[in-house]
Image 1 (tube, one colour):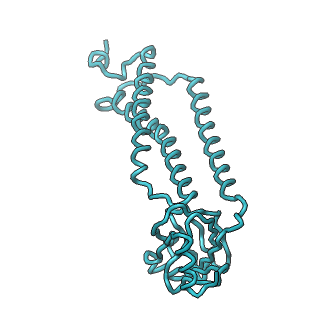
Image 2: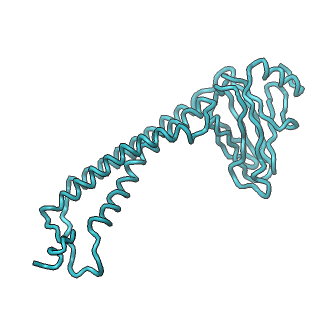
Image 3: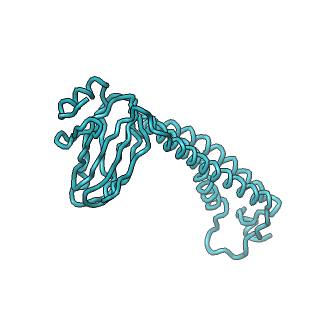
Length: 259
């Protein structure tokens, strides 16, 4: 009997015993995946920002779904790696070759099938979300023109001939669809209101429009620049106030606009 067999070295495991390792690793992976999915669903509720629009809610839900899907995939790698490190470790340099790998068509076909279904699901999810974002404009859509410059945002309301450039604030009515038309006067900026699910590049000399977004929660939020645009990039943020229709109309009037 070899020293490996005497010492109970895992490397001495016969090929007939090998499936036990696979079974143990799969059970461990399944248990940890269930625990990880539960934790992911629970913790994301505290980590994700409050949603204040239909797009914001869709973004948060997508993050939760993608996180749940990524947990078992990541744990598959970590569990099998960790199990291999502990179950097949040796002391010192190995003195003999390991057990030859045997082809397992079912495992190969299963892995290919699972990953293909997962990728197909993500593609369909993305296409469906894109279709929702490109829906036709509502008849009462509020158009907000935003111009980025180092290091501030200039905001105009062409339908009311009003501007908030002096107030350093974006005022929006609740439950009314909004479209942001965004451009830049100098360098590339990134216009983002995370709570509303809005994110679009502000390109010099080009007008980019966001999908329609409907603010659903009255409150104070923030627009920030998410593209490094110079020395005071981190100061390029302003308040976003979602208010009632009456408050929005009063604000438009106070800015010299016409209802």
